[in-house]
Image (tube, rainbow, N blue to C red; front, side):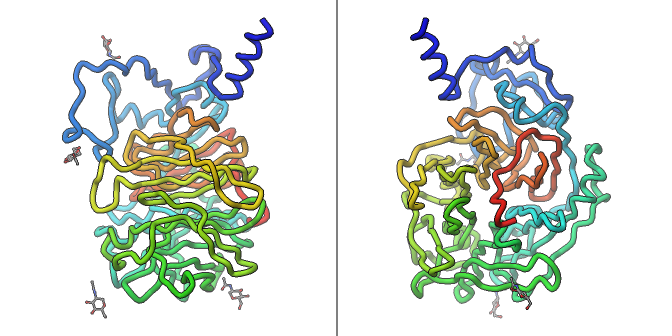
Length: 408
Ligand SMILES: *[C@@H]1O[C@H](CO)[C@@H](O)[C@H](O)[C@H]1NC(C)=O
Ligand SMILES: *[C@@H]1O[C@H](CO)[C@@H](O)[C@H](O)[C@H]1NC(C)=O
Ligand SMILES: *[C@@H]1O[C@H](CO)[C@@H](O)[C@H](O)[C@H]1NC(C)=O
Ligand SMILES: *[C@@H]1O[C@H](CO)[C@@H](O)[C@H](O)[C@H]1NC(C)=O
């Protein structure tokens, strides 16, 4: 008996303990249970040429696209209910006809309760590319809160372009930094180097370059950035999406993750071994780093590359060790990644935001039915999700984001 108890508690520690059946728990009105077991055997399974990571999201038998969107909180495991809370809301805040202005770098500016985000650099519909930087935009969460109980609030919330100077060359990732916003930018053409840029989040939105070289060499195209909650060093990823999207030259460096100490100025490598290191986040306690590898998109679609999240242990000295394959996503790529205060991991994926517990068990999805490259917790159980041509607002979550309070 003692042995069984030990096994049970060990299993619980691993996050795989048996729990009460889902049906016995109250399901929020915008949530639905998806019984994965009913989908394990399909009458026929398409080839990779017919159905693969880049295809439209899977609509399983007996579901419809409309039905999947109608109740966008998809529950695979009852642990997800603890994250969702009793009555989460889901609102389409804004929409554009085709310009993908709701792309990445979602960041909360707490002092004014605003959320900033950026356009998709290099996307033909964005009209960016070599000679034009992707734009920065913002919305007010006061306006968003006023429509949180509406499913579709398109037209009711103002999306404001943030005209800043000097211009940040193709920003793509962002985080709070000393009450300002720190952007990772991909650079532009051969002569405007990628780097880290600090933007004043209020007018006149002036910008200061924090870092634009590695001992005199250009980075490839910085993608995402985060700050370690304990050592406050800046960690960022540097893949070659500028080259993939034809606005940066061939790479001069290996695609890897860097660490920047902004007190001493030292840039060092944190990890390599990726195809396309993309999103980066730390657990709230700083003990784990999560890095997404979106290698299936490099030079077009290369389906046997990673579409995965890797986890590292972060040692007390801030170095990474013990790389572990944490998750592989079922729909396109895991782009932006974030964590909550309890150690759960969230990634922006091809059909919404996927949520894993700390052991890497997929608990469920916040389903948008389209690419959600990035998102962010924006205080008090709220989340803003970028869906390229749509912007989403979620409230009422029981989960709280692992934001670095001292940087807000
Ligand atoms: C992936 O699937 C789509 C159909 O959804 C197809 O058009 C495309 O050719 C496939 N790609 C590969 C590399 O098989
Ligand atoms: C779909 O519904 C039909 C009719 O209720 C049922 O026979 C079938 O098993 C269901 N398929 C799946 C995959 O659940
Ligand atoms: C970008 O600007 C340069 C210099 O003004 C010009 O030569 C080049 O054709 C432009 N490229 C594109 C893609 O517009
Ligand atoms: C913006 O300008 C103000 C006033 O000169 C300065 O104090 C602040 O540091 C600047 N911020 C950035 C990010 O450049």
